[in-house]
Amino acid sequence: MSEENWIEVGSTDSIEEEDLIRFDHQDKTFCVYKLTDGFYATDGICTHEAVHLEDGLVMDDEIECPMHQGIFNIKSGEALSPPACEDLKTYPVKVDNDKIFIKID
Amino acid sequence: MKNNIIILGGGQAGIYAAREIRQNDSKSNIKILGEENLLPYERPPLSKDFLLDKKKAEDLYFHSSDVLKNENIEFENISINKVDFENKKLFAKNDNVYSYDSLLISTGSENKKLTLDNNLKNDIYYLRNLEEAKKIKEIVSNKNKITIIGGGFIGLEIASSLSQLQKKVVVIEIGNQLMGRIIPKQIADLVQNTHIEHGNEIILNKQIEKISKKNDDYEILLNDNSLIETDFIIAGIGSTPTVKLFENTNLKLDNGIVTNQFCETSIKDVYAAGDVSNFYHPFYERNMRLESYQHAQNHGICAGKNIAGVKTEYSSIPWMWSDQFNLNLQLTGICDEYDEIIERGNDINNGVIYFFLKNNKIRGACGVGVIGKVGRDIRITSKLTEKDAIVDKQILSDQNLKLNKLIQK
Image (tube, rainbow over all chains, first blue to last red; front, side, top):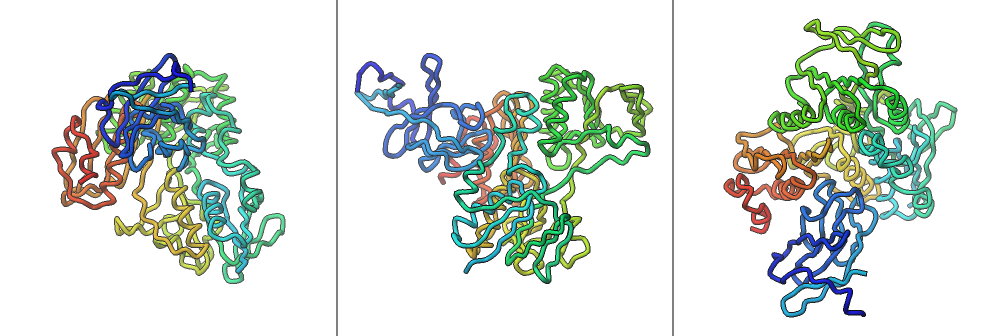
């Protein structure tokens, strides 16, 4: 894994548990989540309609789109409930010295 | 046991029921009979992204024909004109006969039509299906001043889309507020302001006396003698359940097909789901008929389980949305049974929600805001409603306090 694709998102205390923050990098936007067992990252935009998931509800490892209630598994990106049917892309996350990094390909 | 299961109606409730039956029953024959020669498709985008050309017809299908083939679900485009519940048979216009062991009726609802005393029936357009959406889209490309009769969800969504296509839009509503059937006035007024800010004209409290044709255009005379000149008319004045086929049968009808919480009708082995069903809701302890995306889907799934022998009660808290301009409006539960209203927020940019409480418990809520701003809170509200818990009103009313706190308690 090349080091240069790890992008710093922020400090680990910038996200509350069972919550997320939005992270924009170049022309892309992401959601970075803190779940009970660690940090995760997905694309920021719902695959159903172009709305950002930053205002969605995080619960039980799932993110629910605030617009039409499409639900995705945060860890796998799997679309779990209509109207979403296309999976959400996920990204590797690591924590180093209390900083969160995501690996953008 | 291998049964013949027929699903009458090829919309959202029908397709979700079919797939749910297959999940629980690998053997039975499942056949959907649809009046439109199209696989089941999503209707919400018709008034929005389809008119705006952001979505094409092929983007609207719930599932490809491959999915149905893989799950061994048959779809047939046919119109049924007679039902014999006693002998469990359906008769088609082309003389085909379909026998069933279990029948799901998911015929949906249909648009109410304006009653006009002259010969303008074909001049007024309605929007429910893809064919109608295609026609409207094609015709409005050459029109400029468009009148929409009816200020409900569908009329306002079309008004929003046509405004975005640079059309001059007038909305005429008979009631004293927009979306009056289910949306609280406070929220309706915020939506109305947004329409006006975008240049749409909203006329409330007016009835149509007469529509006349002048060359290729129309004149609409209102009951205050004002006259609206327009070159295209679309009406969205509500809908009625599609039950004509059952009117002279034993099937119990009352504002749709009366069903219990298991989607069962008054006739054994006959189920109903979606818009056509006036179902008993065990949480609200009353019957209701809903016309929404979430309901069509979940009610279809519930009917599918029950048909497959997995006894399942339907108690989903109602939820619906409308998208107009940059606004997303959401409603959860029911907002007409309350003894207290609590307001959360007052700026549409951050979202405004009204909670409707009875005996200190939430019965429903309605919110509107710039896209994304009310969804999370409305979703949490659905969960709080379902829990039937006494809620902390301070948290509900203060937008700086997260609603999550209430659900974690």
